[in-house]
Length: 392
Image (cartoon, rainbow, N blue to C red; front, top):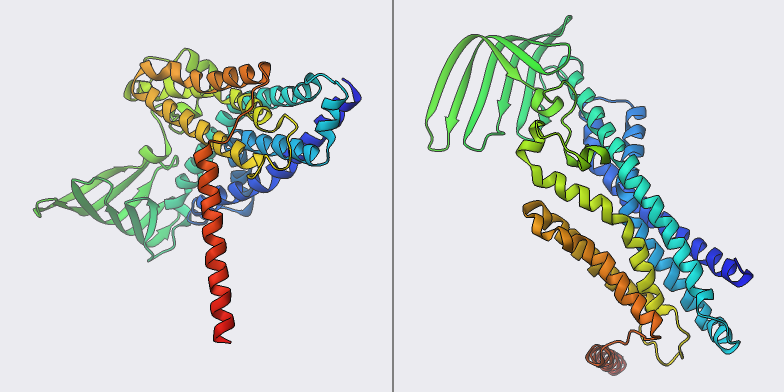
């Protein structure tokens, strides 16, 4: 690689890291705080919280990475243009490949990294989060819930106990179950016993009150009643329930037709497969878009809006389109070609524009709109200043 190409590659990578780290930290913090109740409500340790935080990171990295690359490329090339480096390169008769090659190289490397994270690291991290949740909920009833305090096990399910004894025995048990929208259930029992796996609660000597949507109430007394907790912690094979996002790539390529979740939602596995096969293409597509917008030397009078803004607007629009067609492919397989068309079509159009030395021009009506908005703001600011002077 030539010295100038190495220089450009180093600057882009540095700016990429500068953009990636703070944005990733903010989104990561939001995601962690959104799940902190899993740790606090189940009485887990700080170590469990740190494990949860580390497992969440791979799930957001592939989404943030392409946008950080857009910022790194456009900001670097714009700074080089403002410092007259790009005009000097053109005036020296150098090939445009000197600029294109390092950008394409870093985008391909990041695309390969994204592919590895999405297909090999992210499923394992998602599975780890589900296993952590299963272990936390398994201990919740038997050892964590405080006596004489209502606690939420999951949305719509609440439990209160009067006393806790050794051997997972609970006294004075009240269970409120609002998870079924058609009826409300309230269980009262003198005692209950949680099995070692935390998948069932056996209540003894009690009653269950059932209220339907039309207001009818029924009361049933029981000597022994088993309340199933496995829906939130376990699957049929004894492990946490595995959905499409939790499965490895090998399973998505050849799903087990006898799997209960595959039978219930086959479209989700199809959608997840094609998402994983296309997500790594977005860093490459965004790199080509950034080159079209900021890869040529321009006069300072040409650019009224920073190229990074237009690159990010286009990137967000393309990513939104990608998410949309991926979700639609869950409903129908006819949308699958569009999942690939978004990144590949964008790359093809950008490559054509680069090969033919075409530039992306801002529509005239957009420029006129910004000019009118700027003029309006200046007039209002002038009026407010005059009003302040007159009042003084």
